[in-house]
Image (cartoon, rainbow, N blue to C red; front, side, top):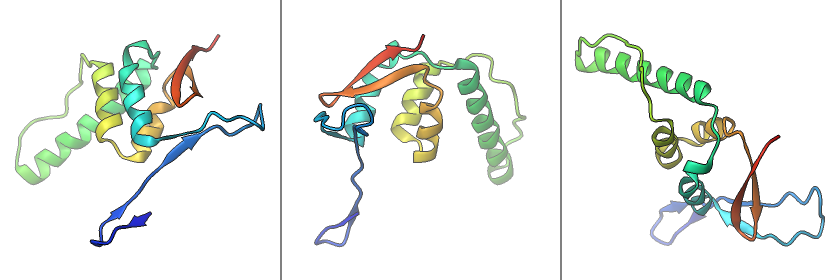
Length: 126
């Protein structure tokens, strides 16, 4: 964390090669914001475990419904979400979600993500 002169704190997160295959790898580091932007740009090419993401979305939807009923007096009942645009939900979580939500969601991506020259490369897992 970095504390600025005006008292605000700023947190920068970088990702880089773990050098497990090549100890001399010079692929560099990429900031988390850029990593998320690159993933969102390639969202149409990602293979995502749709059933798991649907289940997470349904749980979050039910949680929001319970909150609305309890604190806002809404009479809406918990319902099943029949259709979900998974790619839009993934973009939302990448943009607005907590670190834990992002981590869980990235665990449902079925592609192998490779960082090369500060760019994300997707590979199919066979």
